[in-house]
Length: 408
Ligand SMILES: Cc1ncc(COP(=O)(O)O)c(C=O)c1O
Image (tube, helix red, strand yellow):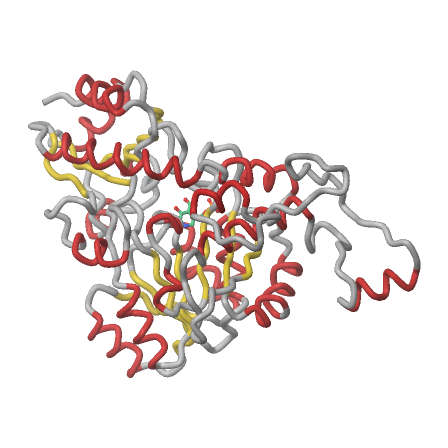
């Protein structure tokens, strides 16, 4: 950042954070579409390889466009947080090709065969499958419980000394279940675990898990951080700079889930308006939730800003606002869900979340189609459940579209 001697606010960091002056004085960091980098001499190559001189070598290992995105996200995630010595917390970020690539580096880089991963039952489907089906192939078994009851979590930790990592996703997809990061992280630390958090739904605008001494945070940058649905991406962040720069960098490089300059450029561009977008996303979502909660055709609204949500208290303790995600149950069940989607005139019928336009999907017939009815009901994914990522359009237009699409 060229403004390095002054401390900047969150929105200013969104715009300026991570930017380095360019040799050609270009205003924005260009898309460095180059797989490799040259050296002035054989000796310089040796110095760069040894880390004695700073420099890029090969784009799977790093690239200036990617570096700007990494630095910007690290500054946002650490914004206003202090380390143990009372100085500004420093984080290192590693950008990946997707949220799942970041998740893979984070988990495989912190557990080994014979150890276990402890997590909550309501998780993003891809993470659930990774933990339940893929990690066991490498000798890493899952322990999946309900994280709402901290005493039960402690019982699980007492009973099984091979648990090495606790993974927390909060708020969770699509019921918006919220978990107490502070209490869970304290327990994880008591039992010597590595504690990781998926902060995709909340983003650093709403929630900063490093405040509670967790070890690693990851995001699917595909969502609110990019904000425009233009690229898939993921990021992993850690406060142990030494470990992030050595073993986790090695894991990232060798698993090969690196990002690329074009998608990093789109991410940097999207991040410039991140704070501003979040403000509008959140205020629109609060109005939509209030409207839906009074609608005759709606049986239930899952939104952390409503006192009726069982996790509202925990959410308000650790989040700045209830966020932009909600789900609601239509009274007419499965068929009402399909007909609602077909009647929409403006909102976008698509999975994913966090884009500037409002995205709506009927969870049982899309994201949870492969889950048995019995199991999805256990997860709270009822037949008429609609998930909504509230966009930044004029809120009246969103409300009008809902009004004409919901049959009372
Ligand atoms: C909470 C959460 N974590 C991780 C992911 C995976 O991210 P990606 O699709 O970028 O790999 C998603 C994707 O929807 C998600 O919602």
